[in-house]
Length: 71
Image (spheres, rainbow, N blue to C red):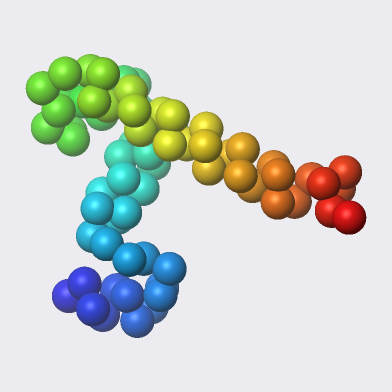
């Protein structure tokens, strides 16, 4: 199944990327404790790391597309 997904999107290198994107999506739509439960994390700090993933992704997109960075 993973090979089929990789054919659709070659940027996906590992199944963990899918899990990380799902948890990041959940954090946008649910509160932290709900996502902790849905993800099966014992500690809330494990879930909070995915909030940082979202910020890193946003920062990279800003650097890529911001008009002052395009030279």
